[in-house]
Length: 226
Image (cartoon, rainbow, N blue to C red):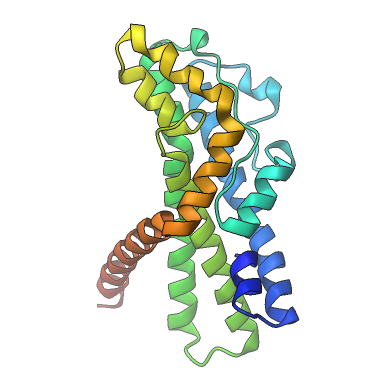
């Protein structure tokens, strides 16, 4: 994160690297996240997602400038959300839940695949060199931002994805009262970022999942090598 690089007294080169690598990682993370939302919504019956132009990995279709700045500074932010039309879903409740979870699932899967690539490069080129060192650093950024974005969006506070899942599981009379919290979304986002940055909660989850992924990758590569 850029803020960490600055506060830790990083050199101009390190800060520039954090900005460039962070921007690449953010764009990849939000693209796969929002594409997954749109794709699952389309599969569940919302055919308008193609017309909305959200079934693409082009980050410009999903980018929210303020959310990206927050993402670069603190490691979690937001994109322009996919507006699903649950009335088009064959099974509305199931459609909303699956569509809402799709973004984080895509981030976790993407993080795993990028981490797998990083491990393969380390195994294939153990002596590294400056080029592979920079590539590995970039891959670390991509993995970290994917996992952070995935966890952040699962927080059950409107308008994050986790809240949509919770809302569908609540009794009808409480559902819209709960979702009405979204009117305070900007305050919620800023409060969450301050709290999460202070207590490193997302970082702990990210590190735990990364450790699990590494154990899975080690097992996979061990089987292949044998």
